[in-house]
Each structure stands twice: as structure tokens, then as C-alpha cells.
Image 1 (cartoon, one colour):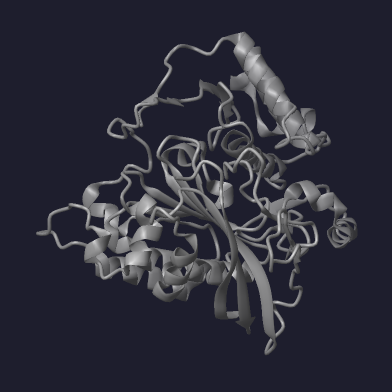
Image 2 (image 1 turned 180 degrees about the vertical axis):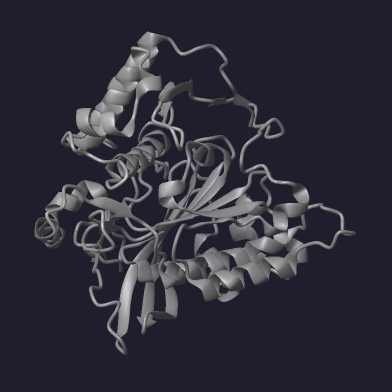
Length: 441
């Protein structure tokens, strides 16, 4: 796949249309302050006032701060700029990746830029692709980038690096990619991961991080029922704390990664790193439009986290999460339940807990692109989900159920699994049901 870069200047009419589109988007829909911020800096750009923009002017004119506002003592503008960059990234990654003109807010600047969206050509060639994902071939074995700022599970991260270091070529080795058949993989693992190991695309392993919020102070809190900033105002505990501290704003914090997510990354890295496939790991909030269109994707997260890019069949998936975190079986077959219940006690020590989760394989937005989604209603399920697609015994069970009469595996499918955990550690993972999605061969 090549990327066609459009070099002509974006017209004033196109810039204003892009601004109007962003202001009406779902990504910015519930944040009046961010919309005011974006409108103000864009209007300054349209009117040629961008060089005179200051934090003070933005704070007092766009964000409602008083005239005694001090940028030294109050980081409101910088925090809002950070949030706005995230919202714009999400807008053009998940909600509207094909919108023709995109707005960027470069780091360290309050001057917006407008650019045409790079359009992939349809010839499937990747030789002309020049992106951050294009890594030197000698570095491919060590090319997992942990895109986590702040806290990460250090022991597991160290183990991931150790796995990659042990798999790295020596300087005298040729940089050719190693075939999975030479790695001691089982036949079932080779079949299951063939769409990724036989592709020239790099792999982006993306994981969700839990949402915490801060109020402009050292206090960081979390409401376990809230996973996105758009729902913050519905959180009674957070709103009480906001009123207690007389805080004007609530800021998003995603510096923390779960132990289960770190284990999921470890098992996927350990399996794939010897193949020489270029890989990176990143938080879902850091995923870019470039990743969505150029990489094969492994998505680890909770229901709804990736709905904008999971590219399901026209009539949707069969195993669908409900608001109470149970899974509805849209078209149950004999012996199957109509609803698979949610477990609400995964963190209770000592108890054997049962839960259900969903694995899907679908095509990506580009020709020859693949998306493997590991979706669980609780973050504690990320580890067993990854285990089920990387462990030889589980892979054998899965492949035996998926195999078509032709002897091949379907291109697209969804699988419902049962997970048993004790002390947040997987005890057993087992197959429950699956569906071959329309269009599979």
C-alpha cells in the first residue's frame, strides 16, 4: 500500500468546513470548553492573528478565565491543549478517518494546521510507505515500543524486553524474516496467526488503559463504572470530589496499565517476536489514523473501545455485549444460551470466578489488512484472552472448532470463550461457541 500525499494548499472554505465538522463531531460533542478552544485558535488562524496568540488570551477569551489569570500558576490552557490533541486524534482515527481535511494542533504550539488526509492507493504495495511504523530491518526483532507514559508493570515489561533480546539476530545474521514453521510453533498456531506472520505489514498491539481523573492537583481518582470522559458528569462520586475541591475542570489521566494487560502484551510478544514481524504496543488513546490504515492490528480492550475500526459484517456481530456486561447471543443454536451472564466479582481473592469474553478476526479498512480483537468486559480478562490465542493447547482447541469443510480457517469469525480465574489469574479457558462471519472463505 502506498500513501498518496496531496501537496496543494487547503483552501479557506475547506478549513472552515473542517472546523465545522470537528465542532459537530461526537468526539468533541460534550466538551463545550474544547470546542470553544478549537474555534478560537482556528478563527485566529483564519484572521491572521495566530502569531499574537498567548495562553492568557486563550484562557480569558476562550476558556472563561478571569482577567487575573496567570499562566505560571494555572496550567489550564496547556491541559486543555493536551486534551484537544487527544480528541482530534480520536476523531480522525475512529470516528472519521476518511474526512478529507484534518486539523492538527502541533505540540508546543497553539496554531492549528490543516492538511489533506493521506489516501492509500489500491494496489496493495507497501514498498512506498514511509511512516513511523517503517523500522530498520535489523531493528525489527526489538521493535516493540511500549507507548505508556507513567506507570507500567515493570517486571512484565522487563520480561517482554528480555524475550525480544533473546530473539534478536546477531550482527552477522541476515536480516531476513524467520518463517513461523521454523520456530517450533504448532501447526495450529501457524494457521491461526498466518494472516499476521505472512503479511508485510507491521503489527500494532493496542491496549486499553483505565480512566483516572485529576482536578488540577496531585489527587488522582477513579470511578470504576466510568471509562470515557464523555460520561464523567454522570459520575456522582467524581462530581462530589469536584465540588469538594471547588475545581473548575476535570482532567483525563491514563498513566496506569493493568497487570492483566501487561501479561497479554507479554504472551503476544513472546509468540511473535521471533518471526521478525515489526511490532509495537501502544495505548488505545495513542492509536493514530496511520496505524489504523497501515498496520495489522491486535486490539485488547473492553466493549465499545474499538467499535469505530473493528469493521464487522453489515448485520453486525452475533455475540454482543449488553450494558450490564453480559453477552447476548443474537441467534442462539441448540445447546447455547441466549445470554451469557457477566461476573461482577473478578477481584475477590480466593474465589473461583467464571466470566465470558469474545475474540473476533475481521478484515481491516484496507485490502489485505487483518484485525484480531480480544474483548473482555473486565480488564482482568485481557490476560486469559491473549493466552487462548497464543498457547498451543488452546490454539489446537480453537482451530479444530473453526476449521471449515474445505480444511481451511475462515477469514472472519467471532468466538465466545469461558474463563475461570482465581486471584485474578486464569485457571482455565475454554471454547463455548463461534460464528463464521459473512464473506469468509
